Image (cartoon, rainbow, N blue to C red; front, side):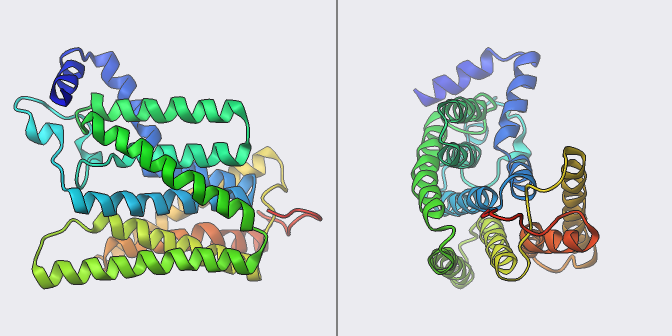
Length: 301
């Protein structure tokens, strides 16, 4: 049944459909989702940005952990004659779909924070569209996409709700954030040890990338909260746009520098530094040069 659905989508494909669904699948790719998080964190609400970042990254840790346990081949790897599209975005196991889960996690966490019917509707439509795009492109089976959506919901709603409730209770927030990081780190260390000891050849890059980015984001937000809070609301549109583009460009430069000058280091180390830069270093430096201001009176996040 699943093979017939994938082949039907493939056989009925056109150049215009390919272009459209490749654009839609971009809504579930990490760089776009992280770009959304940065805009929210730097220019709208520190609280909302942190909730979105933490929920999305933790969901990706869960996703990649499940992938390691299932190890399901993808349609373009299984069906003879099927040419996958955007294969470079298809890493690791097929089940569950990372794009579907990432989109659902971020969009529904945002809807939970916004508490608006239209946000819930947009989250549902966009998540379903991303899920179908993965099937259309031959990157996933329908059950991969469905499982990604469900896992995204199961992670996003309780995690976003809890972070929303405890965000301004510093001790409880730190206990939760660092408790989750401890579990994620221990699992990562265990997987690395098991892979090396048993020579399993596990594809751990995606899990370690998500885990170390989560670590950088959590450390950065903790330091920002304790030592250098900033206002995400101060400034006009042009200032917000300028600091957003500058922050992203410098984040990309930092990651490039790691790969260029420290090629022997694991690439996921650069992601942890980018997470730290996003949540703490850039706002801190930005306050010194006038890109950011101190929190406004009564501004909680």
